[in-house]
Image (cartoon, rainbow, N blue to C red):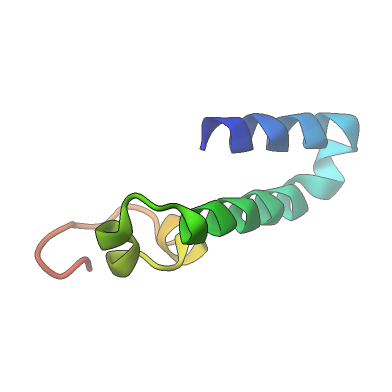
Length: 68
């Protein structure tokens, strides 16, 4: 994930930050989702959190037996 964020910052730096920040964030989430879907490890967690963007955008919440 760290390399994806570093790539995002580099892409924003090369362009006008005020115009592209949201676009680059979406691209980073798309890349992360692609890696998440193809990763051989963490399959149990993938079943619980299949959509990275949805999970990230929900913000802080309680974690319990039923991931709320």
